[in-house]
Length: 288
Picture 1 (cartoon, rainbow, N blue to C red):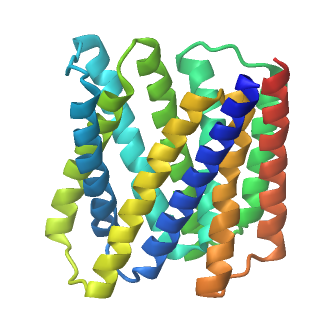
Picture 2 (cartoon, helix red, strand yellow):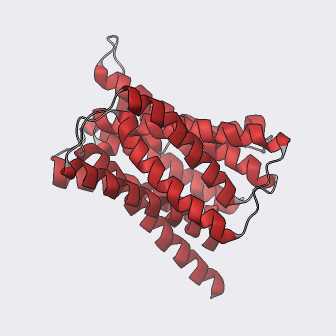
């Protein structure tokens, strides 16, 4: 009974996380024609403030071993690349497409963990990754002529790679015993510092409406971050990870309601392929 209750809690929190991130995606898109780094700064600053207070509340001591500093910096840099690329994709693509490309992160994490952390990976898992990238082709729709849409799609894939690489670094830091509050705080600080010079150099005036939207995006991102943290504390990844793809479902719903966005048949087929690959990976991980 306890295990069932834990799994139910995990599913609830990961769905809450998906809802939070989908609201972030919607608000970033609705904020309109603002520089990507300016939008990201709002999201990062909010997360930095919250993570700082949580770090103080956790009672964890700031303990940075020289051997861990490089990996923590890599986590922050890759996470920043993933975040900035995702925000750029949201500005130039349908939010459901951008969300799905960002959900390639687990596949990149598997590949990078196998290469750099020497984690055992089976042939079937590699096949699931290959299948997912077939789905990407239907979303990107590559042609012989480079278009703005294709460029945004490529940036979206880079965003998924950045997030996946960041998660692989988190796995490495976790194995070394670094507290999660310290990892989150490090990412938030570095990501905010990276964004500040770009915002100073290219700042656009914002209306009260845009400020409210980006503030709501920061709240959504915070809910998403804490939701996924609570989810994986309540239940193991193999039991609940597939529910993280509800971010795409929620984002597609908001895109239809608020932006009149309807994915074309190729994108829908790409979603189906990537989700099928994730589902196969989910069941494979549960069995093994």
